[in-house]
Image 1 (cartoon, helix red, strand yellow):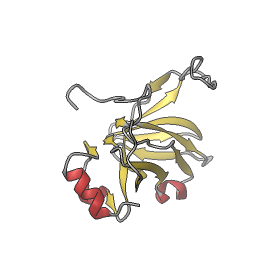
Image 2 (image 1 turned 90 degrees about the horizontal axis):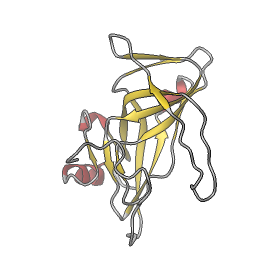
Image 3 (image 1 turned 30 degrees about the vertical axis):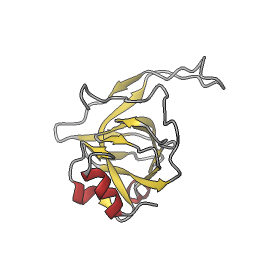
Image 4 (image 1 turned 90 degrees about the vertical axis):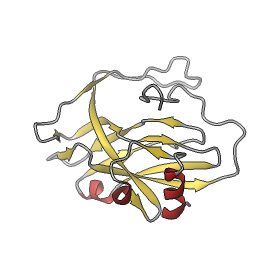
Amino acid sequence: MLNSSEIRQLIEDGRLITDYIDLDRQLQPTGFDLSLSEVLAYADGGSVDFSNVERVIPKTTPLEPDEDGWYSLRQGCYVIVYNEVVRIPLDVVALARSRSTMLRNGAAVETAVWDPGYQGRSNSLLVVHNPHGIRLKRDARVAQLVFFRIEEVGKGYDGIFQRERMREGE
């Protein structure tokens, strides 16, 4: 697992994470805190098959925070989008986990493996279990990304989510 010094060096070299808010606050002893850009609500259902030929990603609609930047979320499932652009090197794999503060508030961030070669401004599933809901402020730190060194892969991630939500020139 990469430690904070290794993560900082990759970030400062421009090879791991950009568009973060505060490197010193987001960098953790063995990871990096991802922050909330926006919350989306599911507008319909999706479909999953073996080959992805019949895969359907559900439509979503953006939710609006209040004038102070707070999202008031009821129990249920949401899509959260991160502020940060992540670029996973070919000799690294990453996993994201809910921050403990989220769990203590009755909410969990669910993620997949962040494959070597992936680049993008990703999103994750937010599940609000608390029957009374949760309030999340824009830019709140909601998940921690941890990184593991692996033998370098010959070919990195090349799926449909490559470069998702990245602006021209990023």
